[in-house]
Amino acid sequence: MIGRLENNNSIVVAAHRGLKCDYPENTLLAFQKAMESKVDMLELDLRLSKDGVVMVIHDETLERTTNGSGKVMDHTLAELKQLDAGGWFDPVFEGLKIPTFEELCSLIASYPEMLLNVEIKPSPHAKWVVDKAVAMLDEFGYLPRCVFTSFDAVIIAYIHDTYQLKTQGFPAELMHNFDSGPEGTYSKMWAVGISMKLLTPKLVQEFQDKDILPWCYCPDVDQQVYYALGCGSTLMTCNNPRPAQEIRYVIEHNGR
View 1: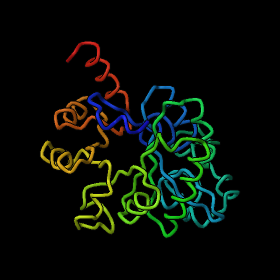
View 2: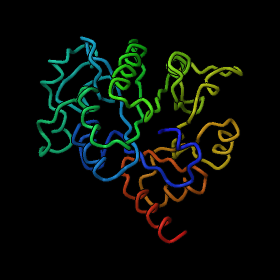
View 3: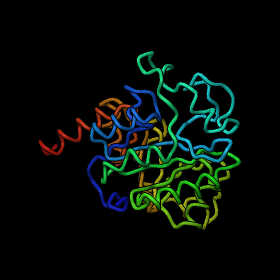
């Protein structure tokens, strides 16, 4: 399924950590609302709890997006589930929890066309997270929908070499452990995520010349969406997907 993006010319919209413009990021509510809004892909972040459960959370630590403190990996699943992961965004969302990856996979079951961008956050346990995530995605039958992302080139290589799955990396200067050799990191990347700060037509062309799909993040207003299109980048990971979705609708219905 994910392979259909290789020859795609229309805008593809991915929701960055769910519909995080309106709901607390990386919560089941944010992902549910993103799917209801008809995005094409969910982008999500994985880390490991102290007792080896794959959790959906971006930061290494708990302070920004929960009422907890300390590192995610220093807390068990039971401890993490006691935390509030919604009130920091707005008191109306108090009571939302950090989801397990299994909970998110169950939620996605009702959306058989939904693509997944699964980001493995750098950590001492990142390969273990990969192994557990791939096994779970395989169990749910979701692997054909997935691309796997990491800022750690070692993890990109591990996913590519061990599982022969599609990966998204980043420009070399943004990656840890980047291997610049002819069989290095770029040779193991199916796609690249380019920030709006770095995005240029020249950089897009350089990656296209390497047969790497040039995706971008995060075009959240009309001007950024049109700029990304002008650069040749059509897959957009957005904090606010609406501008990209609305512009896609206009292009598809008006031919411009």
